[in-house]
Image 1 (tube, rainbow, N blue to C red):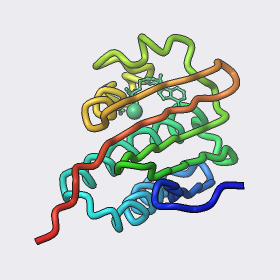
Image 2: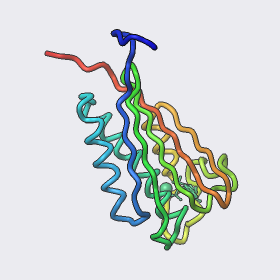
Image 3: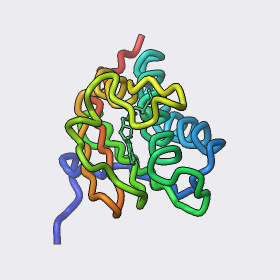
Image 4: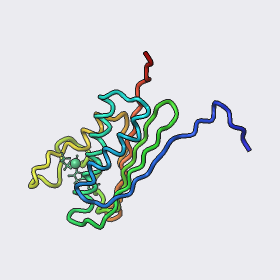
Length: 154
Ligand SMILES: Nc1ncnc2c1ncn2[C@@H]1O[C@H](COP(=O)(O)OP(=O)(O)OP(=O)(O)O)[C@@H](O)[C@H]1O
Ligand SMILES: [Mg+2]
């Protein structure tokens, strides 16, 4: 058994599970922002994280489940050591056949809905790392990592 000392960092984590309804996109972004707020992120960092979460969650709601509102979306957030924030968005929807193609800027499978195909590009530019794992017919997991800047005390 290990004895607690200052080197034992215990990550703060949360998990949300909600229905694939469009109104839950704002619920997810606000919940993640509220969870991260005690870390004193900059306004810019918070905006970037909220936008990236919105993009990933809306993809699960729109693409993974389509009209089906019975699907569930899971958002997990872990604040790791050194202000590293790891966020994952998981659905059990239709999955992505070609992840590389889907991640290309301007690629969308729904041009008729006036989608711009920029969701993954936005996530990639706002976060430090983006990983997309998908199994067609099974679902998709998007993992995003952002290292928050050091908080300064005045
Ligand atoms: N969770 C998902 N399940 C199934 N397909 C997905 C999922 N996320 C993304 N995709 C596929 O990847 C494509 C690209 O996603 P991306 O978010 O970059 O663009 P978009 O959603 O089509 O447009 P925008 O995000 O600009 O409104 C989508 O058109 C869709 O085919
Ligand atoms: Mg999108």
